[in-house]
Length: 355
Image 1: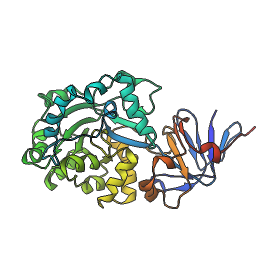
Image 2: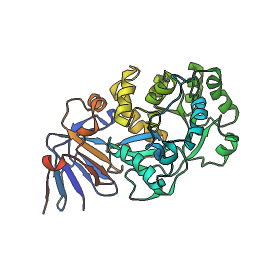
Image 3: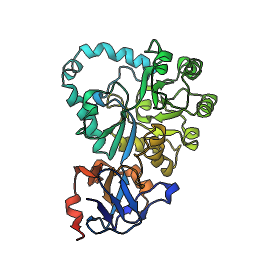
Image 4: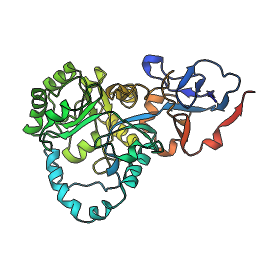
């Protein structure tokens, strides 16, 4: 049975006319219509004085690593691989030794709930697609078709990994996650290996030069920006403006091992750099991320898209307000038209049927 939201401010992409108060009809598979009145048999969800945002898209997380504490062993690293070399031996020490014994399903669920509570409904996981992430009852939707390599430093055969990956799916790799000469050389090395293509998704990109950024955009590649992890480990972050202008930018949280927190924290960190407008940041966690990940039914409340959304109080400028939201502001989260997380919605919504 379809549901129709009425009297709410629906947050649409700028290119679709932007936010407006309009009916939104959906079932469990897709958004059926905008701007059309409810039909006989619809369940009506009256959300007067509320705002409905599309579910956010987290383009980079390590979902099984969010139960670890934020960790580093030097004030600043010149390259993230040095952090990896510092961290890996500690996995045999406490508290990591005990935390590694947590069942994988629980590890992954912790990452899923982190995302759900911050309005994220779709996540790109950068690691193997573990069995819990393929289950229909996982807290959020997880990208199912992708290729990946960890990085040029930690993989022996990046070119082979790329060749064996699906050509029509995004292929993700950590790249230029540093401020040293090695990080600065990685884009050229990836290009020389034949791995810089229109399905390539670069993660971090702190060490990319202006020429590197231009070359990546020319090749059709994109960038996932994780500023809070960059500042924590490296003391600086990427210049992302050209990727945003080209529509090839997404935002990712990374895991709690290095990040500030959830996607709402990441948005505030990104906004504080002053590089992007609120509209550009909105795209980076909605339609821009969907485009980069080749995930066409997420990131927008448009007909044909999956009905993934979250509800907050009514606001004047939804793009700006998104940067200021906290999980406490989120009244409910819906995925595939079903409520997955709820806060204050029962106090604000009226539900009834049209007979």
